[in-house]
Amino acid sequence: SAEFLDRLPVLELIVATSAGLDHIDLPACRSRGIVVTNASSAFAEDVADCAVGLLIDVLRRISAADRFVRGRMWPVKETYPLGFKLGGKRVGIVGLGSIGSEVAKRLSAFGCTIAYTSRNKKQSVPFLFYANVRDLAANSDVLVLCCALTKETYHLVNKDVMVALGKEGVIINVGRGSLINEKELVQCLVGGEIGGAGLDVYENEPNVPKELFGLDNVVLSPHSAGGTPEGFDAVLQLTVGNLRAFFSNKPLVSVVSNE
Image (cartoon, rainbow, N blue to C red; front, side):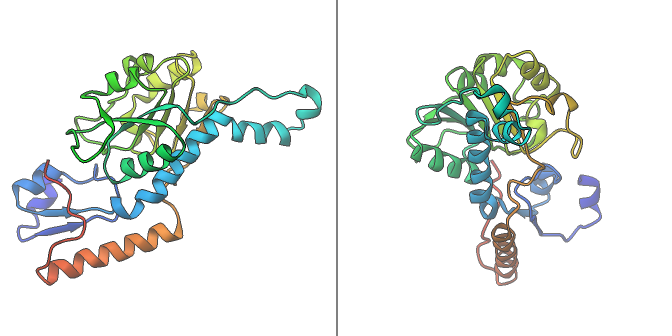
């Protein structure tokens, strides 16, 4: 916080070991000339893998099918509801940073059509850009949330966005829980206004809305998208790399943009 930073008048660098930076007052850091680094690039591949896994699980009903078999319902009901194909889906990515770019790369390989919204249009990518998340949702079958949580992105996905996504639309959130208005998400899922959700993050962790527990079109994960031994080793190497660069007066490895 700004108050905490006031107690550290000679502070020059904050090395964060997380991808998200919602616990750091970035404007206060900028105004004091404090450089901030994060670990988004170290977690990017693992978080992207999890996002794709959640999406496949929701579309193909894998976790629900597992419960169906373990509950010995197969001999009783004989048939299981059809899932949905991933290939050909229009996927809208909210935040095309290091994680979002890895999601796009993976889903492109599955034959999905990629579009995105971000703070700025990226000239180096071939994907269609939408200036706001509602327009992105209206032209997507799936929304994947990968952006940072800021004052501007708080509750970025609300009922209006979900209705635009449609009754068969799927939301995947591997960013931060408060990117979505969770109360409205629950209402839309329970009311059938969207098709499903794969969630790794929540507004009030570790508390998860109890209404989600009985929904077979919802897959839940305990904020573990980046939780692999390889990911944590990469974070260690990145953190050490930033510190070594700082004390050697060399360019830092993962500076957070001032945009």
